[in-house]
Length: 406
Image (cartoon, rainbow, N blue to C red):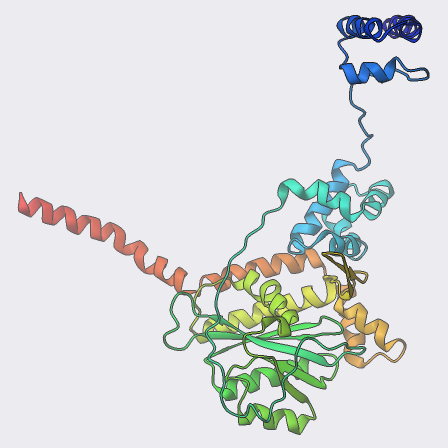
């Protein structure tokens, strides 16, 4: 009834407004109409024009498209996978969903359809209240090498690659707040084509240990490297590394000094595959090296088999804006499978069989346990273990001294 009454009032005022003889008369009608309806003057002017309808009061609410269980499954995969970007998470859902059915009760075909149909933008909306961003800057402690620079050519920027085998490598320190003595380093290596990443920890920064860590990584990867690029640290620019690359037929290049963008791929992997896992604490024992490599063994399976990543396809500058276009998010293993086609190497076949057997949720829990075990070997944990029993004894000693003074 209220809607019909409003429509009748509108039609009456519309006739009077259209038949007004002067502008002053129209203004008076408009004032009276605004007092009766409470509309804004500009909105009322539009309504009094022929053909306009009154908008219904209240906001329009969209129907619920995703059930609580579907959102719970998506959030669980997001957390277990290490909080990936929504575009990567979207590509992750079909790979993780069969395993999620074993961890969640009641995933019906309807819920499964909801999980697979959600868009990356909708994922951002649903998870916006749960995201936490932490940014922290550190500075490297590797001194630039001065020897053999004339034997190692400079590579400016990342090359355009069409096959696996072109890699970037870098060292990540675990020295805490002090660089004195020996501590653990992580050699991190990534492939530019497939984004395959391999970290390896060792104690000290001797040339022999750096080359030994690189040799272990090259034996482990499912393809051959033909080119390696590093920064200008002395741990890379030395005779042992140059001869080792020459014997294996690997082209060894270096980036420009103070140009981290030349090694942008490995700098990004240093954060996602190393710093987010081990932090900035100090590790300086062989037990910490063993625990760190045990952690990396699980991390490389998670990152290379279950974590899709995107690759930059091209850049376009339109006016003052730089637009970047990326390819579809794909796991490093699937990129290798797509490249080799039917002629899959034996190592890649074994990894495909291993992925069918691995539960990514259990793998994520295993990574959490190994992280806690590693933290217990850090200098911070040792300091807490040392200070905890001394605190009550120190308090008792001070109480006794105060009693003697009295």
